[in-house]
Length: 271
Image (cartoon, rainbow, N blue to C red):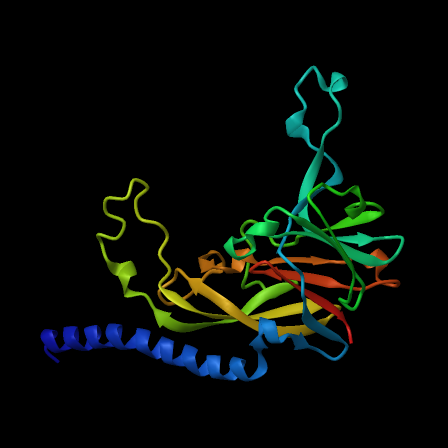
């Protein structure tokens, strides 16, 4: 076989392989689409269901303290003179450990709601996601954290989205639309910050949420910065997801897990 023929065959293989990978991805996506509804449609397993809790406004993040001393706040030689500072964490949902209900704060805003901009809603709901009270005020409320345990957001800054040992992971990414502009060498030319991260594919992430050894499946929009094979840190949009659970020590009285996506709150509860 002549050298030119070998080169042409090699080039053909290089060109065809990406198309085969995308075709295989599309076939797998058909399978996942049948078993996964969109997040707004909810999900269910044998004993649990995932559904949206209808809240007014945008859910607010809060800070909680751990019992771990923050060593970075202590200067050498002056430790005994400084107040103890503890490592903090973020969350959105409080568990009232006395009444066994949940509490959140949301804020109104947006041009369509200008009259109520900055107004806070302090909302209480039960273990089935039913709203029990909605107090509106422009002042901070200490009642939100009264008897409250802030549930820790478990999503890490560099979350391993493909790691199946995590409570929530991407089981499959559907490559629905390709962005060829990412190949443009002049992309970002003239921008003071240079070219931003470009995502080659937009599509759907098919997620598995594992709670009490049961799997709830749903799909949500996400993009990938990888041309062919996505890694954990290639996904955009996935990092907008937050996830927290009621600690094991309270689950004999009240169960629940919470997912936040695009400022919407979703709750895992018993059927």
